[in-house]
Image 1 (cartoon, helix red, strand yellow):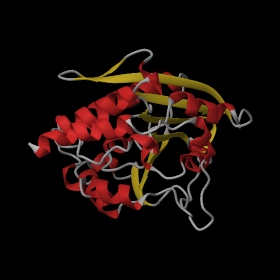
Image 2 (tube, one colour; image 1 turned 180 degrees about the vertical axis):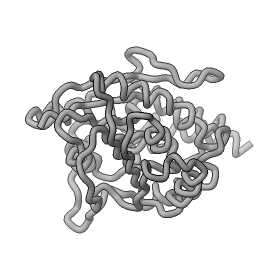
Image 3 (cartoon, helix red, strand yellow; image 1 turned 90 degrees about the vertical axis):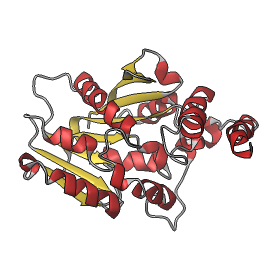
Length: 274
């Protein structure tokens, strides 16, 4: 009986919690002088514990597997050019679901994928060895974005990561350093709304168990208008912004739903102009 009441108690606790406002949003967060990384050790421990099941299509990472085709659809939407992107940097690559698929594209010459977890990268490297075609096209590096040394690329991708880092504003600053002029920074994250808390925290984690408990911290979700404001305040660096809202439909997977970026999961891409 007690265990059955836990989701309800959690719901009550969150509903009584004050909503974060722009005054203390990620745009105003600053890094303590003693800190040198956006990596959150608790988040790393959580995802490292899931490493062995990363490539199980019906395991805890199933939502990521199902979302991967939409990632490529969104990049094609952003990179509307006769010449498709040839170089990728995938930040927070996890077990390599997107990194492998990007490296397999016939127009890709090089994909670099980074993650701060040695445990997860071990799984990623083992899986990549199963496909000899990836040998010269995919490189995994155990690194945070702050310590990475790498040339600029056509596409920097950061999928389902920004809501798990500390000091996301400074994290975005670093991501931008690796996008060549004319290239795109593309990411996916979750809006901070009561709807997203209900679907991702209460239903997906507590009730259905589709996602391991502790995967999401609603307070770290970032609204689409907050991300948009971050890039619009830097017009000397960033230009066109594209957004695509997506919704998980049981039995069908992820589907694009116009306007849903305001309430839940969404993709956002922005072009580097200088």
